Image (cartoon, rainbow, N blue to C red; front, side, top):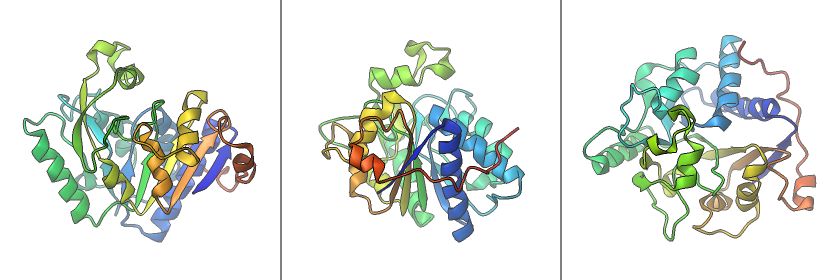
Length: 263
């Protein structure tokens, strides 16, 4: 596991974007696994800036998103599909038929989850999976539980997760869907490489679990320790709970600081 500690949100976003650019340079037809949420905003802003500067070509890329709310249609601006369209897809040259999403508005969610697993398999698997992490240690919508689901599944969201996702619902937690569809832990861990990005002091316990904590279903992010190719990019607040020796042995890099951002 590689750890990169950054001084600012912008630096963390640019470092993440640089890894995406490197992936596309090595394999232009990469399959990218993408998250939503506040952490992703700065990353997508940096990627759009790179694309506009001619430094990131998405014309051969396929994307698969981690999750979607149950009960929201693809055109609902509060859906994760709506988030992705607004923040990334409409600003880059990814073909519309290369964008793959879970449909949270279907009647048969079990069938939809199976369809999504087949989409990923037919694409040859995920080459690079970007992840955020919840304060309770969830990745995707794999919430802490006695047992974690291996593959894409329907999940009931914890109250703290719904609170963290209340922004698009004008802050009304009661309006946030109580269930979602999410990639499972095995689906995520089968990606060829993973980049976890965490920002802010509220994420410090989850980051500690990801890097050096006990592997437990109480902290789904801890299972990233089992993956052979994980990069963790954090700001100093999110790194606060890491053992001093671990943090000091992973100095931040500066190679990405010149990446352009969206105007």
